[in-house]
Length: 225
Image (cartoon, rainbow, N blue to C red; front, top):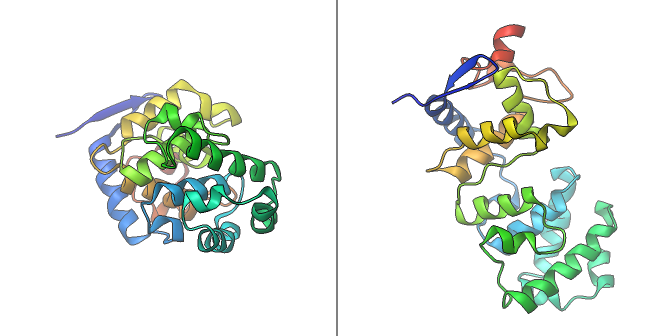
């Protein structure tokens, strides 16, 4: 049954988009090491490391980190100097302090377990709205719409909306992301959406619209091809 969503005088069928995107995502999955686990500790670490940092740069640091500190109790015992020795190559020195504080907060406030509730996640040092949502969806498959520059770009092009730096905070974009979210398979859906933004609906290169599973509904593809 169609589930129609309208914005900017453009209407799409959300059910068809979800099916097409998830089907494409299964064949184009980027198998980063943090994607083959559902351990909340490891997913939280990866999301903090990925903040303003390319995934390829994060991979070796993430792998060394989880080998050295395989769980949160072991990480919480590390000194700032220990964490710095592993994390310094990623830049953003303030991130090291946040990881240090975050480990101690989880141990003291949540008995060493990464909390599930969003408000609890947001109470941790360094955890943004996006990171909290990513941990919830990728660890527990909870229905979270993820708003970052990549998902906003795909959504904006789909509906022919002007994209600005402030679009991540725009209510219309957030409502559209939530409306399009696949509630039954939010984990697969979000991974597919992020992979589409990286491989097809690119920012610094012309999007490969002819390869896009959403081209039949995308206003940008229709107007530029």
